[in-house]
Length: 126
Image (tube, rainbow, N blue to C red):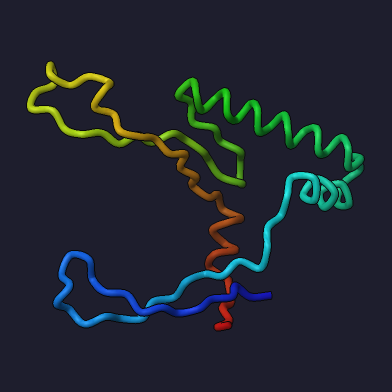
């Protein structure tokens, strides 16, 4: 198996006078839904697909709750999730308040197995 990609020409947004260059874009071959993941996991262990699906739903709920509490969620060799925020700046610490926070995102840091997979990927242009 290999990760499919296309290439597209892009200019430098910081310096439009620079010549455009060609960059790779990963192309999805579809998506994997939670129920399908549950079935695939169930085949590899002694748990039923319904039980596996229930556990994955519960994991999603608990992960969401823990992240909302400001915790880093570590899932062993799978990796870790945490919330990251961005904000506008304030002239002094005293002038900073939560209204300057502009957004948040969930950051995932892959564990050893996913890093190994990344290091061994093959690529195919489509």
